[in-house]
Figure 1: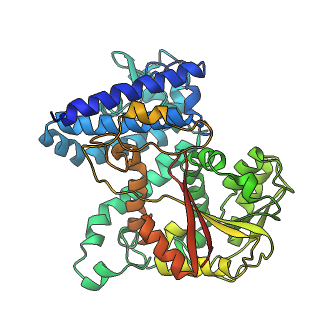
Figure 2 (figure 1 turned 180 degrees about the horizontal axis):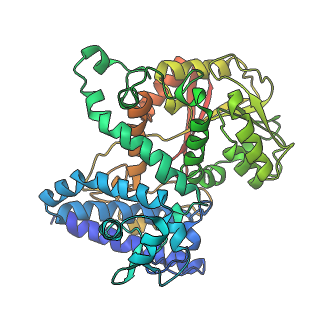
Amino acid sequence: MSVSEITSLQKTLNAALDAFKAELTAQNLPEPSLSTSKAHPIDEITYLPTPAMYEARRAVLASLGLIKSLVQSPWDALTANTWMVLEVAGVRLTAEIGLATVLGDSEEGLSLAEIAEKTGVDALKLERILRLLITQGWFRETKHGSFANNRLSNLIKKDQPGYHLATYMNDLFNKIGASFADAVNHPDPEFKKNNDPFHTAFQLAYKTNVAYFGADGWLTKDPQEAVKFGLAMGAVGPTSDPGVAADFAWDAITKGKDGIVDVGGGQGTLCCSLAAKYPEIKKFIVQDLPETREAAESFIASKGLIGRVEFEAQDFFKPQQRKGKYVFVMQRVLHDWSTEKGAIMIKHIKDVLNENSCLLIIDTVILPAVVSSEGPELVQSLLALNKNVYQPAPPPPFVPADFGEASRMQHQVNVALTALCNSFERTLPQLQEMVELGGMKIKKVHATRGWASITEVVPA
């Protein structure tokens, strides 16, 4: 007898929630709550769930997303999607006026009149916006007309990295998003089929001929814009760093090497994370364009790692200056560029590799959304997990291969890259194509507890 989708997904959801709660108990942690202004320990950007907790979370998100689609009226779903842009704008507004900072840690919150006085925003308009945001988990209404923070809204306080994501990045993609459909379906056939970084929604939205990234790009021409972008990415990139640091044998791969070279390493967040976790790795070099130096050296100093982590100017489209027994890393770099441009970067690194060096590509590997009615039950998969070496659980029945809602951010970034610079996150065959074009081959792909995979690459 066949089992229905709803019945199967409900079984997966219940098993996932039980496992999630059991992991909280094992760590002596309370259950998360949306009814308090206090942050939960798992809200820390550096928090790394156990393998079982991470897989349980993925299964919860996947099951809930699918169950919602099964029980909700499709007409209501379409309507909600149509006006979703106002929820996004509402989050940006509350961040820009500093509402989360104004509300602070008060459990009772403030009345609309008090909020209006402190922010200068009309109380009645704000009331409507806040009640909309509350339906999506942002803020809370403690009593009629009084509002307070919760674990989501805490992230957009002005002293948090989430503030920059909710303001600068939110505004950037609000504008680009308005031009995205026009770019993909442009009336000019040449524009429509062009995959270079000069024919995107970004150019249409900002009325410019300049690419967003690159030595002569938008960020390079406006250093303040580059700072804002870097601050916003501080709420995205570090969420994957704990898994990247923990779920790969960095100590083994660097043994006998001169150190790690992070090509296009930005401020150095990855190198600093690795330096903190692996004291036996003595040398880290963060390479990026010269205009990144100030921000990188400031960040490295803030972590107390001057001397062990150093910045070095390097254009990744030019021959690699570092030669020796290094582990080269490219994290969140290749996904900003076309396959052909990416292959050029890879070739520059290949040219300096020897038998004692290698390249690691840290990027999302996009999985298909194929669904099967067959597959192991979640309970069995969780019991089979290795507590010491992370491996993702296979999808339960009726859960897509990419775990649906749990992979939403990866797919959002994939489309965002298309809109911004005509690049993309790659499937494994697409990644393999680029690597081979650069004269190398994939040795192994390592999953991590986060949106990134670590792909070992060696000369072909």
